[in-house]
Length: 365
Length: 140
Image (tube, rainbow over all chains, first blue to last red; front, side, top):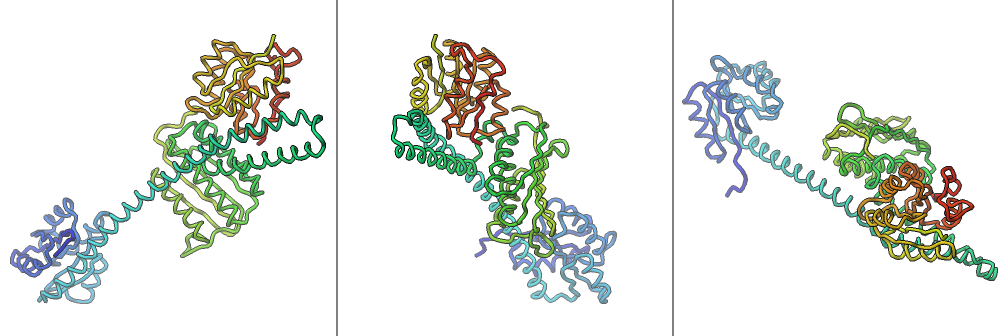
């Protein structure tokens, strides 16, 4: 029982008898077999159908097998198609080399051994099917990851809102009541006044802690007055907490952007600064956000730290958290149709995110 | 003549505390209360308060937008933004919208002194332009 989808196998030969032979041999595979009598006919099929394997004769009139292979490979969509040559002539090593250089995966000489041909085609048909399955899974995973990021943002926004709506007023009321009492200190004994003073400090510390948690979860200014004030406020808080000096350069002409763009850009900056603090050892960081061209925003975060470790020449994550962060940034930007570039050396790291924006940027705060 | 306050906050608890703090001064009275910006604008036009104490984050239009619209109606009336999110940048936006002072909810001690400064020596008169900075206070 096959539960998997059939793939298309294209057989190209100018001799109908050979095509019938290949068909008889490959029928057992249960895939879709497509016949083409010429190179031109084969190209027509390729343009219309998703082909897994091309089985082709080398010697054909007009367009021979090698020329056809060249044409197929020129098209980006066809670069991964498995091409198997079959030839009764052209059997030198040079001919074979020629075929492999054109991207062939095999070169079979006549007479064909049916079992061998079938086995070889089966391998590439299965490979194609698995590739397709992987691509589908990848798409599903990306879509799931985007949904998870969006849900995480929404959940953080909800918790921050709850903190603001429930605990915020309690702290404000406590603070005001303490203020009232503080005006009456003359009526209190020195010990009581001292306790009141301590309470004031506790309330202030409590409110500061809750405010930090709430702001890290979701920046309140982001929804109300936009990305740039929210980033400035976050950078100020970050500098205070981390002792990393942060320079912020934001183009004032950037107005309000769609909410999903604003939260994504904010999270990218937040993740970058967190990495600067946790991993770079840098004492400084700079954030620059500016329109780089029409309908595109460039976000640049730079530090002067020790740089990121490299795997195969590419900056990579020093720890699992960092890695998830980088991947999260990439996924966020991919969802927006944007890109992420990382330049890292022993003198520091620069992360550059490019984000397309659908409307020309107009100030509207 | 007593100074009349309009207090705007979506939390009943905060409004209650504000009432207690403000009414401790016998020359001050609460002329109206609102839990959102739209209602506040309506009361502002009807009641002609001398001072407005305004929350920032509320359902509907936020405090800055509410202040902007109030300033268009009566720019001389001092508006104090009373917020959990006080920061220099928010303060800049608030001032552009006509807010005279920003007070942090997490450190409300300077509130009374700031309002007295805004009102100037003659408490019942609306604050003159230029006295706005005297009571500046944000908790960062």
